[in-house]
Image 1 (spheres, helix red, strand yellow):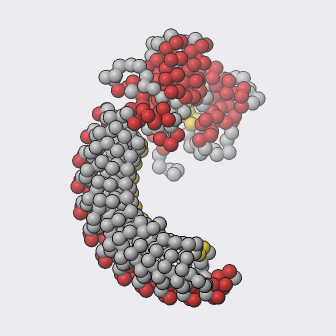
Image 2 (cartoon, rainbow, N blue to C red):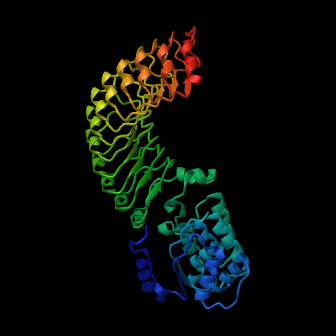
Image 3 (cartoon, rainbow, N blue to C red):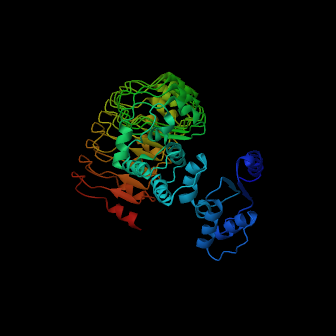
Length: 470
């Protein structure tokens, strides 16, 4: 967004810190159309570089020559495309040069520079890892030490160092996407027992991923000081992890993922103070026996996932007060026999998943009041006790997808389904007791998918269905 003072702040910071650097450059007004060649030429022009480069490779080589052995600060203002930075700043040299060289001012040998390049590449562009490695290598110029560290980094093993100083604990402080990690690196997370209290110093953190840290026992109270944290991912932290009450102070938190935390004993009542929380994922939280009533005070909550919470015995009527709730997943709620009538007050609800709710006997007639509902799922061997659908279901005027797959006790469909004018998908596969389809089904003009596979009791189809193909 333009006009909010970003450039002014940049210049103020630039002027304040310029005494700390040997080389300074501030390039303003970079346009999306500007090539890396033109941007670097602007940089070199500010640095009074007289040679006229003819290619990107040549100008990048000049940049390295100018900056390689100097402490510098470069500001590229209003960059539109990340690739412009990648091509202008030769990170394979500069990042590691910044991390190590300026600690003692010595030049690196050719061999160390080559190993350094490999180490930077192995860090996959994570700047925090470069900072930690720079501290680790400070003053250490033995080639074997660097090579050994590189091999350990590639294998995902902890680096040698002062175990008391958390600065050296590379793998306990880096935010690394689990999906991109190697098997050896995943095993490191599996052995993580606790987080350093110093985590609170990372005040600008917005996302913290600790998924599959299966040995993690507790979270430090200091976590509450991460005032900008928006996402906390604790998926499959399967040990007896407990949540600190101080979690309530994460005022910016919008996503809390506790799926697969099978040993988590309870949710702190203080969760209600997470006023910005939009998504709460409790998928697979098998030890959860009840939801705190205070949960209804999460007024910003749009998604609640209770899939696989097999120990839950009932749902609080108060959940109907979650006015912003758009998605509710209750699949695998095996003890659920009916939905509270009050649930029809969820006026913003767009998706309701009741997959594998094997004890569900009936749907409330008041379901018709869910005016925003577009997706209703009652599938996958669930709802075996459900023999009929309420006629009022046809009043779900916004419904686009209805999944009744494997509702093996369902014997008929209400003729009123024809009123679902926006319905595009109707899944009836595995409805083995369904003996006939209403002729009116042919009037579902928006229908694009009709799945009847496994409807073994169907002996014929209405001739009118042919109208759906034209």
